[in-house]
Amino acid sequence: MRITRNTLETTPGPSNWFTGAVYVDTVATPSNGSRLSASSVHFTPGARTAWHTHPNGQTIYVTEGIGLVQRRGGPIEVVRPGDRVFFEPGEEHWHGAAPDRFMTHLAMLDVDDEGNSASWGEHVTDEQYGQQPG
Ligand code: MN
Image (cartoon, rainbow, N blue to C red; front, side, top):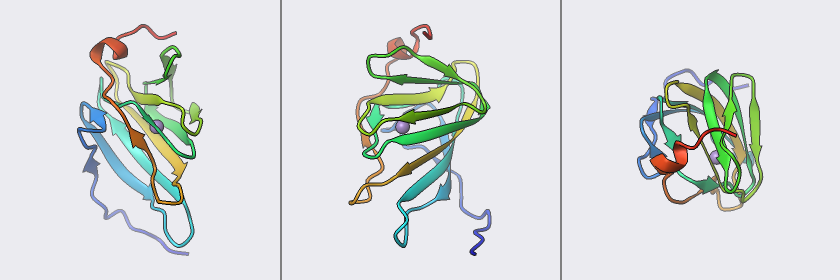
């Protein structure tokens, strides 16, 4: 057993991966044969990821607030605490907060053989983000 105390700093999400203010707390880092990468991601109202994919897919589990998720070609979906979403390997998608709500989710995935967790694309435009949820 190894306890990691709450000493890691909360880090801002990089602006090339996110629109708006996003903060990330690390939960699990791949090491010693474990591929699990997990983080608690805090989105301020209107903040969201850029379009991206994960080589081995990703599960998000909403813990607070109201969120929005979308896969390329699908409608925007509203997600709430207790909802979880699995994005398929290679499925292009984004996730973020509703325009007027904070949202926090736990994000979990397995990195690939090279340690990559995601492949990042273009930002989600205000027009894409502003579409009515399906
Ligand atoms: Mn994702």
